[in-house]
Image 1 (cartoon, rainbow, N blue to C red):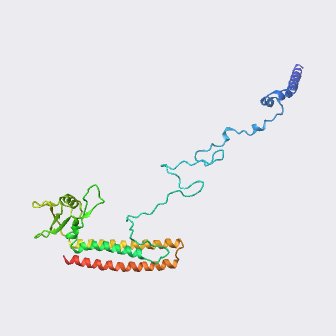
Image 2 (cartoon, rainbow, N blue to C red; image 1 turned 120 degrees about the vertical axis):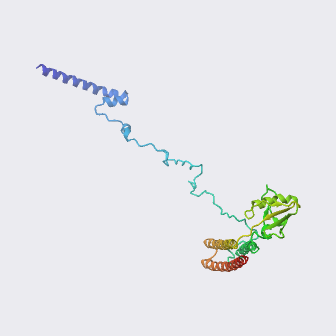
Length: 312
């Protein structure tokens, strides 16, 4: 009986406490903080803002430096390329800001050379001028082989002399500063008679630095303005080899000029300045001009080689 009484007393105590809490809930709801409302209200639900919270393990990863956009949706500038260079294209306009590379050639522009025009595409005077200039240059070089290459007054007289060591742009051929003549009774010695004392040292320096002569000129005891050098004649086989190499350079020069002109025709075609038929017709004309010059090179090469081998 005592156990039943104790259980009833416990039930009455829990019922009284529940009633007290339910009576106090409206008062706390009116004045207490949200945390107390959740604890004291029997069937209270969490606020809507609290439901949006996520545990730490499921939070998204913070954007890194490589992401293109920030949290606000603004575009982040890319870091400059290594070396401090700017990007090739503008991000907003999409245009290429890289400076155009201009074509450069080793040869200086000739003001006397005719300028080709798409308005007169069949005028090949500029190509004729280039061919004539190449012929003049290589014919002058072949002339030295006719006279014995280094073993001649022409080859020695063509040696460039620099009077001023500091100004290398100013030069004169040796023939303008001295007279060149073969020493009588000697087949290998040549005399260089300078016009004045100021030209002696520059001539001596040029002869020493020249790959063809590469020697120290000897000053005459009787005349301080006279220098003497010894030139060994080249073998006929070596001269013939050099002639063929020079003529091959001549051919390459002619081909390069033809290729340059044909590339200009293709450019005009892309610009719709001429038609495809014009490109084909011009190619035939350029090829014909080149073939004629090539025949002349072959004739000159044969003549000089025969002259060289005849002295053998």
